[in-house]
Image 1 (cartoon, rainbow, N blue to C red):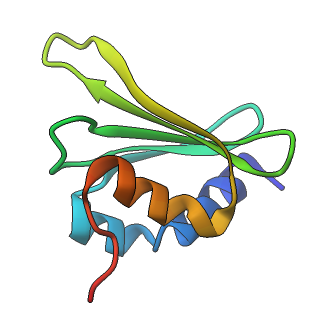
Image 2: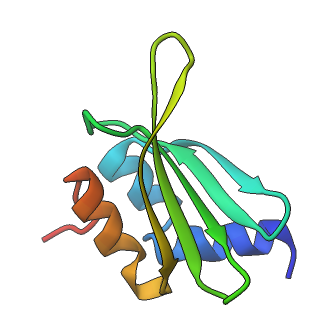
Length: 103
């Protein structure tokens, strides 16, 4: 599976590009090299504004939330390791307070 395929799979598991853009203003989506993953920026949360999701050696995901400061400095806010695909949205909601689901 290519890095682009892995990134697309993660994007689909998070609800798709259109939903992420509509619900949280997701932008700058990048497929990551190496083991594969997805990185994107989002709006609406005071504590974090960038998420990196990487596929790990256990075929699970590691999620790292970052706050990109105005001066360009990156501050790691939280990290969740060995996350199952069906937990991605729930962890995003818990860590940011932003909802990805339309009620």
